Amino acid sequence: MVLDANIVIYAANKPPQWLSDLVLQSGNSVASVVKIEVYGFPGLQDSERKALDDLFAHWKIHPLDDAIIARTIEIRKLRRMGLGDAIIAATALVHQKRLATRNVEDFKHIAGLQLVNPFVE
Image 1 (cartoon, rainbow, N blue to C red):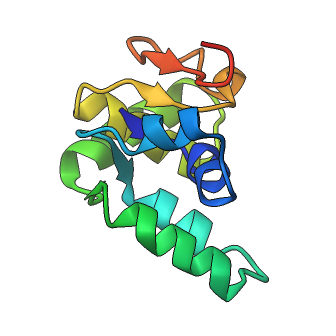
Image 2 (cartoon, helix red, strand yellow):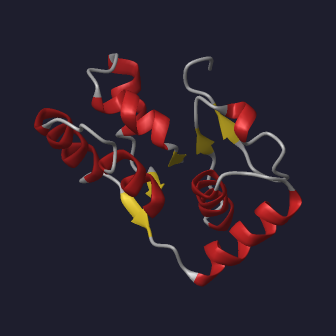
């Protein structure tokens, strides 16, 4: 799965065991913009940064390449959407992975994108 920033944040803040198990599954990854979003949070504490470091060590980070850029442009042409969310969705589509997010409503309009809300499934 590709993990949305909200899942990463929940996983870094004393998550329940089921969420830790889910995010640490082999093959999970994140879009590079997720790293920017979570580490760029104003007021990030050292303990939070350490928790994020530990998590990011487990995941492949997908760089913003030409294929993801092209898909992001397609997504944003179809409907108004934040750049970060569009990059995250495009990353999941390009790499043919499900997107794990708690904000399903933000992504449900994107054709072909498989969504997983781990808090309801």
